[in-house]
Length: 123
Length: 107
Image 1 (cartoon, chains in turn blue, green):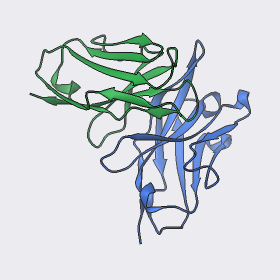
Image 2 (cartoon, helix red, strand yellow; image 1 turned 90 degrees about the vertical axis):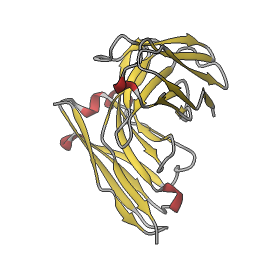
Image 3 (cartoon, chains in turn orange, cyan; image 1 turned 135 degrees about the vertical axis):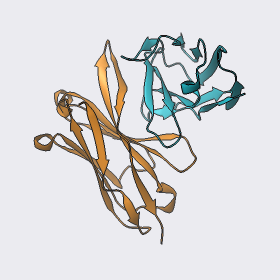
Image 4 (cartoon, chains in turn orange, red; image 1 turned 180 degrees about the vertical axis):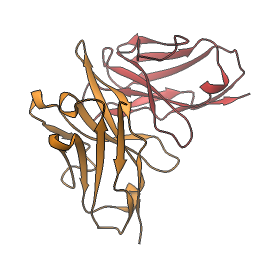
């Protein structure tokens, strides 16, 4: 089955760190761009960052609000994606989704989402 | 950053109604526009990419149109399973940005 499964969420204190994982199955992660998107309680969707595919050297892009604090990485041997989050803020409490982007005719578009993992930043 | 503005923010409609949601980009994005459906407590589901291309498995009652700055998502005949929140997203440039969402409720 083609799916993404996130894990690693939980309660963390402000200023703390957390590492989220996203396990891919049914497809080869390295062929795709992979993103993290978050959603604060009762709010809309917010893009966090992206890692491009192997053919594009796994280069990364980040939202300005997380650049320098969050790091996206991959492990091809585990077909997995990671989000390392540092110096977390209370306003970053959210469900964090892993999303796959696929390519067609010049478009890299989201076509698969995980169920999400909840991160609560609170003292 | 490209701002995405959806209207309306919410609407009430009946089963069988034709529903149209609008999304406007703050600058031209060609057709680098996607639509998503999200039900309460669930992950988003991808519906449309490239403004008008239906994702695999998405029923043809959903359609998208537009180019440049103005886009629409249309549901031809609203069914009970379509009551949800819909988001547009531009992927023309970074940061990728989403509209604020349109909640479709039962009248």
